[in-house]
Image (tube, rainbow, N blue to C red):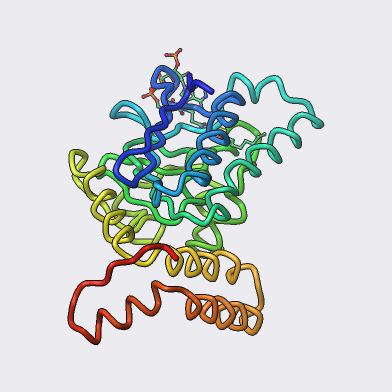
Length: 260
Ligand code: CO8
């Protein structure tokens, strides 16, 4: 399938997904979400892709939200359907077994913030502005923001952001733990690539099982999460990479991981 609303480029182990509707600040319409689903499936099924970097075209926006011209036509039934559809697409970031880094290069608002929240981590340019302004439109977060934002930054701050609709700066997002790092605009992608390369040097199955433990464990009581961790740990012990990693340490040489 060709892409019209996003760019998807697998290169040197990284799958680059770029929202590409700069005239509407990369707003997410239905077609964009469908293409995102397609790109995420392609990345999931391509063993050469180890990490995703997700960003927006142009220097103004990551994603300025769901496309308001589509939202304006919703009725109660299509409103719920649209919300569930977007939630399902975005959920892939947490379940696909490969880490994703949101490179927030400008406005990340509404559905754009919600999409970034589902990524494994977030790096923001100094120029980024992040918020959940849905209440200004008479709606509320519908792509997971009411759930993920409070889990990430706590209920008090999530209430403040969602109920006032105000945007926060990249520095404020860093202070409250919404983003991992803040960079100069020109260093955003290279910073994400440096993180991706560190991950890519690690044992692929150990990375995948660690992600599983973090993502699935977050939804469980701690006791069940600990049991999941122990079980995935046991799976790591079945891999060639575990033998290679421990042997390489003892032989004082770099490990050569094969993802097996
Ligand atoms: N949808 C559609 N078009 C948009 C959007 C959007 N979210 N954001 C910007 N645009 C368009 C503008 O209409 C404008 O188009 P035109 O050139 O034809 O007038 C163009 O992009 C450039 O935008 P501006 O001229 O407004 O640029 P400014 O620099 O003046 O302002 C802002 C930038 C502050 C980002 C401003 O554009 C803005 O407030 N945008 C809307 C942000 C917003 O409210 N986002 C939340 C949308 S709701 C949402 O995401 C809900 C998610 C859950 C949905 C669940 C399914 C039901």
